[in-house]
Image (tube, rainbow, N blue to C red; front, top):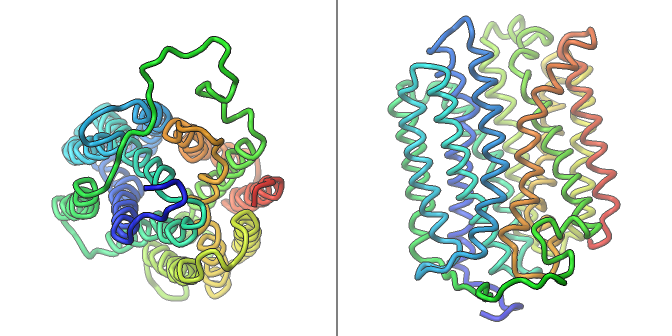
Length: 409
């Protein structure tokens, strides 16, 4: 395939489905099943058990992204560079489900989450590297929009699980495993993945900075996109970490409807996902005609800031729903272009796996520091959970400012 030749429709569909399946296998696990397991291990210490497991999992996620990206660039096999890591990631995720589902101590749960993050991020790093390898710039808009539905759709699946569609743990883990296997392995079997660079020659001592592992940070756009993605991920995490508690303590949902706050969270997730789906479909159908990815990323961040600010002052449930609808609109706009924007920022060299591993740190590291920022904000300011929502709003504004500085649009 030539550098400017678009891949086949089958490849594009397969990559999009595999990416969606990977996130569906991740979000309900970390958002619901791991917290439930922590509570089952020790109800009195569930917060400490959960925080410890998620923290070490986030550290592993950061390392796995970078290392798998670098190693997959240098992998030589009959399957190609990326596919062995995708297949290994699927096997590792399935194994981690077994460890987490049967964990009887905090240490066992942490080990299960660490194994999951290592395997999931190996799979994710290889999928994104294959996107960068095979999809030229003019063909990225539609696929980026489809891939942008991954995390919001996964959250929607998690809300459905919380709502009680699947009551037994074996059914929940089994459903996630089935989605992962059916969504990813057929693509692994069919995707073309040929090595295109020779690493047998020893590196030169006079190689330019761009040839080093950290070389992309010498490029202004890469740094701005990295920082912008870190800000956006921090905003998403800080805005959601106490959302269930916010609904219970600071809105009139329970008094108005006599329903538990979990149902309110499921409703908000559904409203948000409906907007995300609508925006993603518009961007996917329009392709590159809607405008520059950088400008859409700025717009999405600003819309998210508006939704976060409204949520931070809302108490009546209709206003909370409106705030989350705006939040969903902004999420859809941003996620529809995030993957394409990241690949656009990569320097022109054939080490895209390692470079994407670096840029994926901007999504992994906030998973570790955002809970600490949220906890510190909660302790520092009075006013319940609203200061944390204002923190989320401020970080989204920072993301918009950083993306605005990107030169390649």
